Image 1: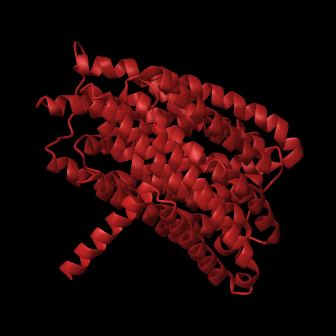
Image 2: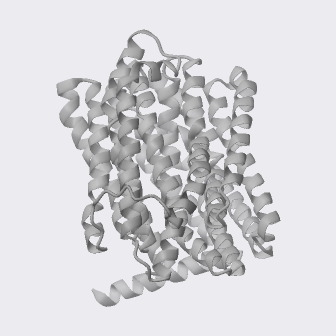
Image 3: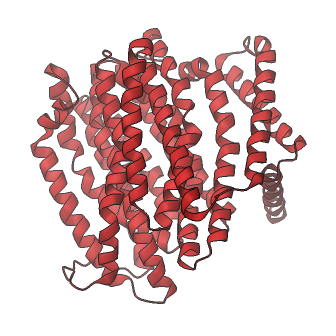
Length: 508
């Protein structure tokens, strides 16, 4: 399967999964607005969500290079899988049990008291079993990706979203806010189960093995797993810190930040997932073969595509922050006050989109080089920058400063990773990348000017039509500008779309 075809497939299913997650947030907001129940759910959901973001990526980074090496040397991978399955079941089973037992103490770490503390702890008790499901999902996703299979793991995000929404509609009327937590755990179970059939197709059997002695492959993975897990946790630490900072700014800030971040995560998940997942095995394979020029070429193309796709999205979210939030959330208990809180956070989150995406891709490049310490070190530096920026901005900007601190930290980490990768393998990009940046920024400037010029005419339309027309017009102007500026990647994308349309038309 070609890179473009794989990326397109991942985009479609990730988009569906993220849209289902977005509809879940809309449902929760319509029930509870930015009140105590919504804050409690968003705090409790932080833990399984962070595990879902951390664990699969960490297992992916450890297991794929080792498994790819075994597969390319035509060696068996079954015994390695049995040992990984055993470790993951034991570790995450213990984590789930401890999480249930100490749920109140964990909830108190976020600065909660009273009824909000009790409700958050109750939700955490229901959510902690999802740790086991997430651990297994991470293992099975890595096995699939090592076999160059990306479809089924991506489908798991769709299953997750669909089950969560269905579960909430059924369980919330019966159990109140706790039904949100139960449905969330069922969603992670569904994401895990979708991968069982494909594992059978690849010939894997689910057996336990404790024969860890003298296993060189496992020993090599063990040397990398601790710094990778630390790095992954560090990368997500800002999510936990954010909840604590937001709680200090008053009720509603946690939910406002979560809702704004939900909007930003849709393009983030689509494009980052589309490029980092299929690119990482390729990067690892080139490094294994010593083909560093090819590795850097793939990395440059990934960074360039992300820039072309995410910078106009950032501009659009800044320009259309209020209408986007109104259309997405303004219903039920989500009133004018909730709209204002959320609108204040969205543009600042959007500013960090490309930095977050490039940071993740550069981190994968270090993992392909089997250098796990550098991303950890930079992640720790990023946390320090995040905390300092919050200390400076919260008194001036409230919870908007928290969102902006996230962007500042992401940019700092991306720049540092780029510089250190440059020192390790030579400059990762050539002059063509700089020309892509210049053309993209010029095209965005033309797009923004066109939107602002015609906005008085567009604003008379109904809200949904205003957004559709404005975003469609902006996308058309941006794409046309890139073509007129002779951006090669824009021409490449256009050629791929034409070829696909021609094939689809010929088959009809």
